[in-house]
Amino acid sequence: MRVFIAGVDGYLGWSLAQHLAARGYEVAGADIFFRRKWVEEMGSWSATPIRPMKERLQAFKERFGRELRFWEGDLREYGLVEQIFREFQPDAIVHFGECPSAPYSMIDVHHAVFVQTNNITTTFNLLFAMRDIRPEAHLVKLGTMGEYGTPNVDIPEGFFEIEYRGRRDRLPFPRQAGSWYHWSKVHGSNNIMFACNIWGLRATDIMQGVVFGTRIEEMGEDERLLTRLDFDQAFGTAVNRFCCQAVIGHPLTPFGKGHQKRGFLPLRDSMQCLTLALENPPAEGEYRVFNQFQEVYDVTELALKVQKVAGELGLEVEVRNLENPRKELEEHYYNPDHQHLLDLGYRPTHDVEAEMRLMIQDLMKYRERIEAKREVLIPDVRWDGRREKVRFLEPTAVR
Image (cartoon, rainbow, N blue to C red; front, side, top):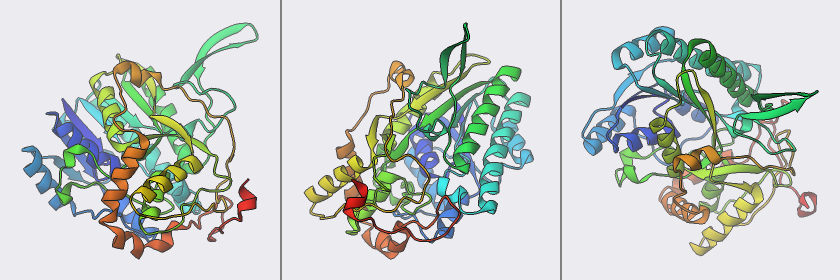
């Protein structure tokens, strides 16, 4: 199978390229290195050292015995997308080529407009190239569980049965996104669903939970093959950020009351799930939705797990709640379905604490890199438009 990965230089893209190559897939990718620039803009860098793409591609060839065909360029330019499709003729397209950050989209009007136009335009270009060049190909699009928000009812996988005024129908489940970024993902999902309906394309929309982890087995011990691990306010997800904080003795920092519930899964399990989606494509004209996560946790529960694992490794760290820069419910009902991937054979590979232990052990090698950017661990992007560092809360304020 020939798989094209949009956003192959990123956290998930670089990992998936290796995961698929190890299984004999022919892999190609494109990137314009925006993720590196965005993280630099936030005053940070990856906790794991990331090599230039030329070195990454050489290491990839040495490790897997084949080249990763790579295009450097902007997927908002349809001519580039068309060129890639005509030259590579992909059987499947994995779309990671978007800005994946809620805080980044909330900085100001320029960032909001950029995130929405970038994310929607790249998806449009891939859809039109599929229609005109590879209509039988399968699009695997990275959505987000954040599209749904936190409704006070169970969350199905994309669609639900409803009876209203005596009539029944199967409809898309309502979206209640919580940032301009998350709304860009909603718009992308709607556009893909419409394209499947009118053009007979096939697509899998992956509503992924929060991913954490430093590595997958296929990376081996070659540092050139490491994927990035961000810990700043815009691109560092909760568990990754907590583990980086633990390594340098910084307090672990849930926001507000800290009882926000989300779906989480390790990086290696994300690779397993994406591969299952690729190997079990939908029918012609089918738009399907997978909710992709291992387990639901509240954020404080995860912080306490990181604290426990860090303590077992000789790292003493406290949990201290921060003022919440976001506008979100801090205590809420949350019960999403995730049966589709289990039906395809998904089996969790590690429990959460075992994965955290591996992460912290990896990150201890890069303690100095994290310490050098300690100041980025406290957010200053607020949903009300201000840029002002949030404060630590008194314990009585989070009960």
